View 1 (cartoon, helix red, strand yellow):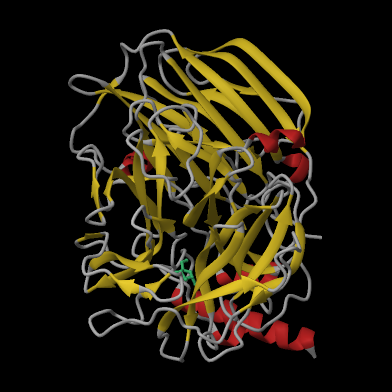
View 2 (view 1 turned 45 degrees about the vertical axis):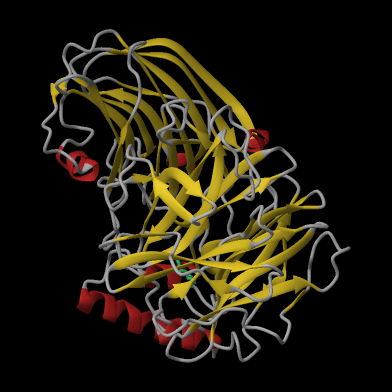
Length: 574
Ligand code: DQQ
């Protein structure tokens, strides 16, 4: 019966997809009512990841309430326990000692009360004085998607696993007042504590097309008052989902507790723009007396602003890891295949590798790097050095599992003289990358890696740089291009790209790519520009996947140093 229901639903969806040519990633959580509770009969392993966070089956989206508590890392996440499409959302819960190996626990929060009967959506954890964690999350209270902000506390704080959570009856803590759009009012942040004895937290929203981060204050965490002014808004940016607000130190790579407000720091405001499905951030100054945030004039406050990741990465959230004094960033990488594919494979969505995040020495952007714990999964290693790549060369990196690998490479450029001229009208990196792909000959670049490549290069996902010469500086473009990644029909195959603000005086560019079957997560120039692509090769799978380094620019490029490791599987939500 289950199987019949599954096959009928799948057939209906395939027909629906064909009729609507519904291949691309959707702009919001699309509701497929008929599929929300179609349980996976089998889980297809062809494109499942080896070392990225994912549950055994079904749909996942936003990371929620990450924290470090009594020696353990906790990750909650939006999860559909009944199917591989968005719906029936609960806060699933996993714990870890290293953020790499994960143990699955029972869901922490699920719809059960009048204040969350129609959904338990995203939110955050705050650790109150006395080491008392408290969850703030969005509850959906009716079928019209009316949103309120609720809280939950551990039933037994002495249990380091925090298995059970209570949603007290004085919920909801916050409801939308008259001038607030109650169906665009969600995703409370971690709260911070001000010297005036008030807690503050933000809730994402919009008014017409203006994105808003509402600010709430409370003395006791129970009675919250909306401040007259939002902490920040921006015209024509649409709904601000999953805001995140935190300090970063002006010096060094250590993180700061969310409540730290000091001279030696700046603040980051990140918003997830529902319209574009990218996570944008600004750096700026937080004025606690006025409760206003003013972005620096070096960062663009809108769609052309800085992104954590120029690829498939959304609804992210950071937390302060007091164990190692660092700030950690979690982000969700949705699928780029069709909903029919997701139902057929029985799962959808992964979390990217947790990243340490800190302020660049130039003070104008953040830097991200996979947490050091990931390196414990490194197995078989191969290395290369001083390898010259002339135009048209591609060199295979043999001896590792190219479908599941960690690759770190530094390229050296003999000269920048041949860099192509940069047209100042090229604002959109992704458009530029789709015009000037990895096979279009250039001056300095394109050069980089061909990941998840089939032997004869019928399929490959290139991650590469191209250097241009603008009026008074060089412009570096980084691309992660899914165009030739797969023969499969109906996939979303974007030429994701971002510019890299890097000093080329030493004529070196580095790249790290984490390759994991259906994801290529790349860090350019030591983590200044990051791009995640989801791809679904048909030939370049398991031991038929290959890895190459290449150069298609007329200027020769040298691989100074390349190290690549096969990656082992961690314990993942068993
Ligand atoms: N996902 C959640 C919302 C949030 C959105 C619902 C972002 O709370 O705004 O699953 O992906």
